[in-house]
Image 1 (cartoon, rainbow, N blue to C red):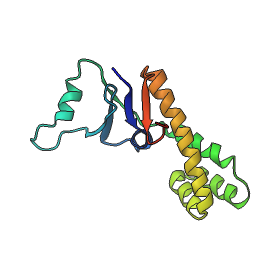
Image 2: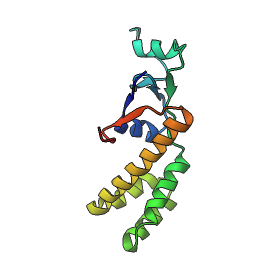
Image 3: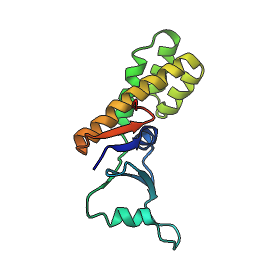
Length: 150
């Protein structure tokens, strides 16, 4: 098996999605990410569902969303790099029940800080994703497309 090419942005989206009725699977042989509803819709056969459910080679792995506590630590780590009014707004947002939404709203008010947050988040998500791929799945020969230099 050669180098597995995985879309980095799609993997980040799968890792940070809100747990719901959609499950995301990674084909560890081809690097494809497939989203499936828990319950099949309609009578049409779904080749991806059939491949995942009939997987005898253990090549399909469910991509579990990051725990909300982990996402909270990510926001806290960024907040700790800020100061002044932004720090006060982000601290307050993190104390609220819907902290993620308030956190994002506070950053939208300052585009420079929002860009800095996106870079920070992407770097941390990349670390998390690589740790999951390597430590949990044992993948070593892979490329995160859109992220890795090719």
